Image (tube, rainbow, N blue to C red; front, side):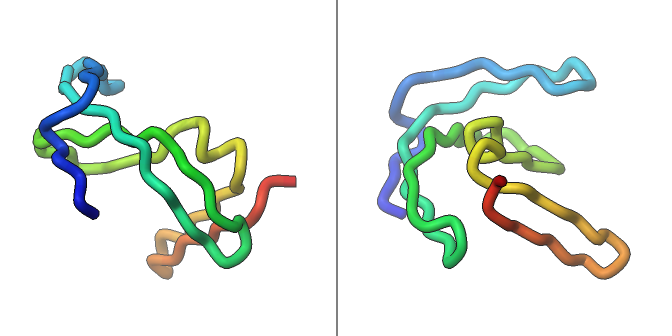
Length: 79
């Protein structure tokens, strides 16, 4: 991606379990066949994170569906 993930503005985040981690913010361009292309600010961290979740900016553009039993993820444009 050509991003120096250790450079950039820093942000301290806290998980629902109370763990804290530090991330650096970078603009990233996304492309999706149904959503088109758009740029979002993404936080990168070198901390071991077991589950990752996109932020609210992304959810303004898309609806996400999970079928864990089938290991399937659905992404459709937001209404």
